[in-house]
Image (cartoon, protein in one colour):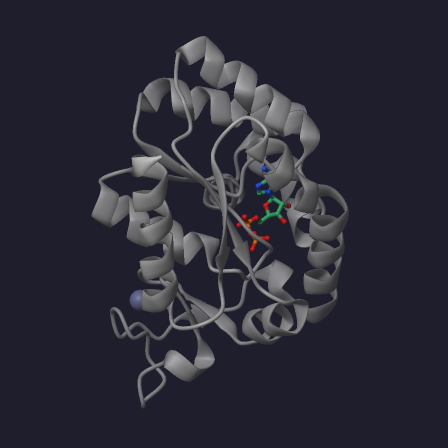
Length: 213
Ligand code: ADP
Ligand code: ZN
């Protein structure tokens, strides 16, 4: 599966739910890049500034990372955050054809801009367990709802100006990617507004419909 959608559309949340219920491996290029930055590796040093500015990491770098991961994983994954450009679509199709793999479904989450800016402005990440949530969803005493952790931080690229830049990049470059994928693989647009459970239910229905087609 491939999960598409603007920043803040809930791709990461939904991909994690899907990975769990459908027994798929969650492949998040954003998480992989953030881990590289945190580890201080050569890759991390190369991409840190690009990510903080809300720009896209070069296609050749992304292809190398994804190729390595998908080759080691075998079948049964959900991709979150990739592909993001026409070049990445072409690279992915070539890679999967070479591996003899198909994409069962591409889900394109639909969320309006105002909702995205609102969501990202309130988003925090737990430094202890990595859970991402909104400030509204914290414990009454301000702890992480998953582990009670208190080292909550804001992603550097969730600063309001960077959010706007990420949205612009999305509209200009990544928006058309879902359509391009849809020419090769089954594609469903799914409403991304509402409770995470409700969205997950819509994605599950889309999967069922795709399986029957
Ligand atoms: P979001 O979808 O909320 O913007 P991600 O975690 O998917 O968050 O990505 C964070 C950042 O990582 C992006 O703004 C970009 O700099 C980089 N990135 C992730 N995936 C890709 C990709 N496929 N191509 C280029 N850059 C990427
Ligand atoms: Zn936590």
